[in-house]
Amino acid sequence: MYNYDEFMANLERRNPAQEEFIQAVGGVVESVIDLVNDNPAYVDAKILERITEPDRVVSFKVEWEDDNHNVQVNRGYRVQFNNTLGPYKGGLRFHSSVSLGSFKFLGFEQTFKNSLTTLPLGGGKGGSDFSPRGKSDGEIMRFCRAFMTQLQKYIGPETDIPAGDIGVGAREIGYLYGQYKRISDEHAGVLTGKGILWGGSLIRPEAAGYGAVYFAREMLKKYNDTLEEKRVAVSGFGNVAWGVVKKASMLGAKVVTISGPDGYILDEEGISTQEKWDYMVQLRLSNNDVVAPYAQKFSAQFIPRKKPWEVPVDMAFPCAIQNELALEDAQTLVGNGVKYVLETSNMGCQRLAENYFIDNKIPYGPGKAVNAGGVAVSGLEMAQNAMKLRWMGQEVDLKLQEIMKSIHDTCLEHSTEQESYINYAKGANIAGFKRVADAMLELGY
Image 1 (cartoon, rainbow, N blue to C red):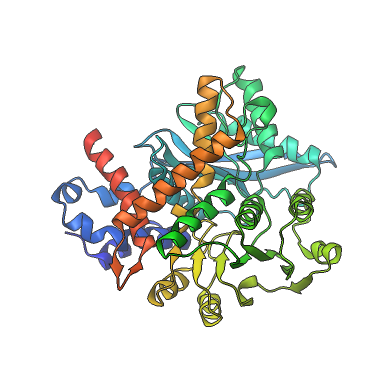
Image 2 (cartoon, rainbow, N blue to C red):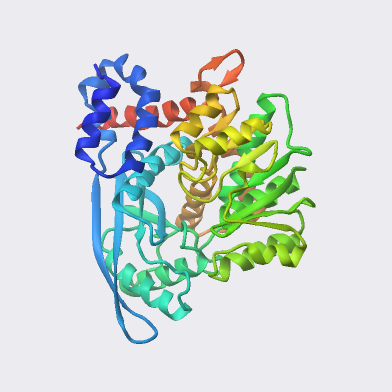
């Protein structure tokens, strides 16, 4: 039998200074510990210990040359967390803030996110402390080539299939895949998020954002509500935020904020035209990592050095980075009458903020369920690569909608309801955990 406090204390001893990983594990273990204790097979097979320990952690040196012919050295990582359900699958993140603990948390979360899609995918994550911000195309290309020269030793189309994440978009995936192809001398589906011309899937860039809105639509249906005329706050302005803004607007909502490290935009007219969506893409590709120029171009308000959660809205979609929404932000949102919160970044809400939403009966969708659309379409890209096919965008979109509806319904099935309130976080944790744990039992140890 497991005691939550004792298990977590032991985990912290074995993983010192890895707060994000401890936070992610704590949320899942709290949800599933009664289920585990009620199942002697889980206890006897030490499922909790095994499922919270990565299969493999790889760290490597990345040496590259900048435009001034100076040698630069960065560190690369790949955390192959759990391949019970299939080959490792998860993004690569290029950002100066990354650490082993952040990749372990992301790989752990990815394991259960991938489980929820029901696709045959395990969980992994990786990247580097290299930041593309302020770098030339040549420098980014040389770094990507050096990074893939090391990473290719550990990945493959049936072993580990990375994708993009923060700092790794279509440009970086192209450089990475080009180097993999040079080294392996084969055209294999070893990365997803590829360009349409060389094996990519239609609507892949929008998939995580679109999927979040499709999950939200199902959530609102459960509460006899719709997206029509909902006022929406979105953080971030990358691929995920872009997808949320587009699809929410298409389905009748009014998105009024996007944000960057410099502050946030408040556009009371709504970020609802093709011109504005295209400009979000331009901002992302500019490497400046700021949103202030949007305000000048579209006569919107720019609020520097603040987050958008102070704006009164019906729905909030944190889309930027982990732990971006703190307890005080949650209190402000609830005080201003927010009705739904959809965590679209990975673990975008701090634990106290998540608990505050649940305690106040605010329907809250956790990231491992809400943002699974990205990896779902990555899985569809892998299927197209394997069959040497290319599906039309409408076909991919319909499959994405089916997957997100299935994820919502699975969370609902495993959630607990009290006074008609649905705890989606607990439902997602239990559903994701149970599929992996049961497969681990069937495979033996």
